[in-house]
Image 1 (cartoon, rainbow, N blue to C red):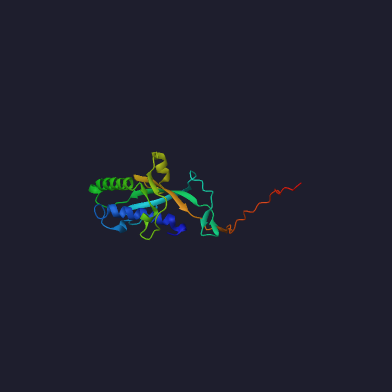
Image 2 (cartoon, rainbow, N blue to C red):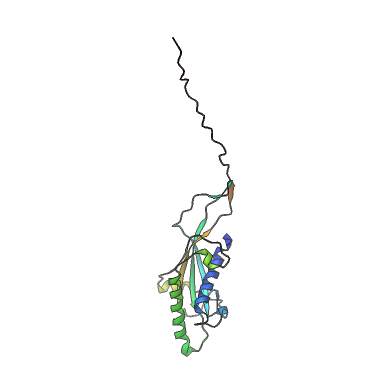
Amino acid sequence: MSDYTRIADIGNGILMLLKEVLIPELLNSPDQIGLCSPEDHGDFAVGVWLYDIKEDTSIQAHEMTNIGRNAQRYPSTYLTLYYMITLYLQSDIKYRAVQEHQIFGRIIQAFRDKAAITPDTFTPTGEPGGDNIRILMQDLDMEDKIRLWTVPNTAYRASLFYTAGPVEIRSTRKKSVKRVQEIDYRFAGKDTSYGTT
């Protein structure tokens, strides 16, 4: 996984998880789930919107990372990603509310079951290992939710709000280091020889 693509990889990984749990039981096609803003959701039935990115200040990375024998990489940046998940179903109005409630329930269940996901889970070609990405539901009041809704003249739709993090973005800055090749244990000391009388 390339470092600068991690934000995109996590968004795609969330889509993969939603497609896995919603298709075909609750939705017909994986094309109905995608990344989009509420203002531009197109034909998506489930829209995932990355509405904010913040630095995770709880992680203070100051130490350099060794790369091989003669180089070090500067400290990483750690981020928290903020997502809003909204439904845009076009089904018959008689069944739409029930279907929405079922989809919301399944998404909440899936994120609870996958509350901690390793980066290699997000993409089939992801590098193994790494810290877990925690998927946590946010506790927002209605005023904050409505404020995040960016569609003019359109009533707010019930949505789910989650954070994903910490997301590591590794620095591309490196510096060369000179390793110790040899240690000289010789010490300068006093002459301990004694003269004879």
